[in-house]
Image 1 (cartoon, rainbow, N blue to C red):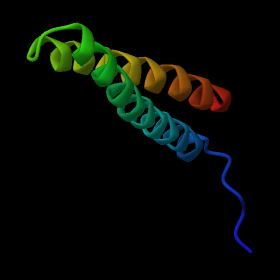
Image 2: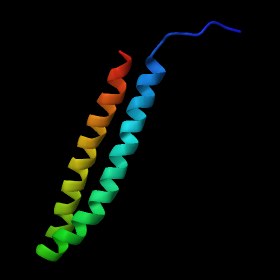
Image 3: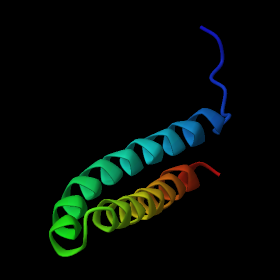
Image 4: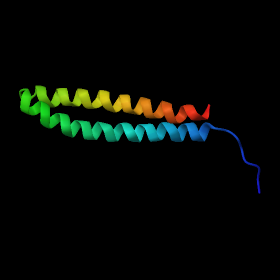
Length: 75
């Protein structure tokens, strides 16, 4: 049996990949919720655009938070 390599790079990549997946889930859910809310409040072109901005920012924040937390364990 070959020796086990103690290189944590694969674990860091897996942590960031999980963070990207979590960010995409947050993006999709927040887009659905905020699109319904903001379309009923704002006019037609402004509601979906504002919902997309909120969804992109929340998805990016979730990706960074989860990715850093998981990848930071393997430094």
